[in-house]
Amino acid sequence: MTADLSLEYALHAEGFGHIAGLDEAGRGAWAGPVVAGAVILPLDRFDLAGILADVNDSKQLTPQVREALLPHIMAAAIATGIGHASNTEIDELGIVPATQLAMRRALAALSVPPDALLTDAMRLPGVSLPCTAIIKGDQKSLSIAAASILAKVTRDQHMNGLDAIFPRYGFREHKGYGTALHQQSLEHFGPCAIHRLTFAPVQAVQAALDAQQERDS
Image 1 (tube, one colour):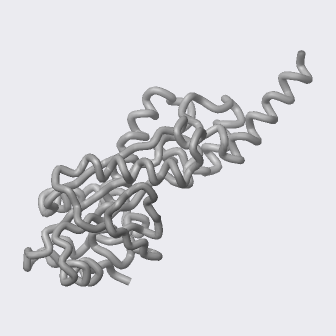
Image 2 (cartoon, rainbow, N blue to C red):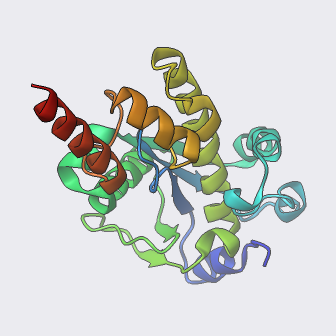
Image 3 (cartoon, helix red, strand yellow):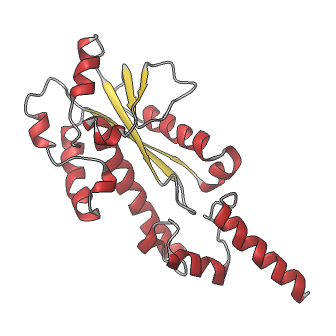
């Protein structure tokens, strides 16, 4: 399946001018923020599909391809926005409300206000704009796919920066996701300031460390 502009053109035909695609990165990670991207594409540009022909669901692309595509997305888009929700906000709110918060922040960061929204299966309570939540939207809508790349590249760069602050955890390699390397470092060093303490794998490690400390005391 290749993302195209069919959904955008259908909304455009209904009278919606600026349509923002939204997607997130980092929802399933054990550490770091969830990051949302919002992208409004110029639907009146006849060569848009050709310029963004390789844009697709970010999970289906290599890091190198995502990084190469992002400048083309930024150059073609009418407006782009990024929103973060921190690991602390994720622990306080839960991952779905925190993801919705990041998406609302991404919308607020757009320099051009959208008239309608397309999301990757995510409803946005508290947003009055028409919002269409599409299952596997990042594989169907070019705007959502572009937003997924924007969110993923931004989050990866953020996690690379956090790797320099917390070098023992390998964040540059796994970006906070639940790999064997992350599990090993978490068990060895315990959670750090950017871990999501309400996530079950992190909770389990913390509980084991607390039990060991109690036995040793």
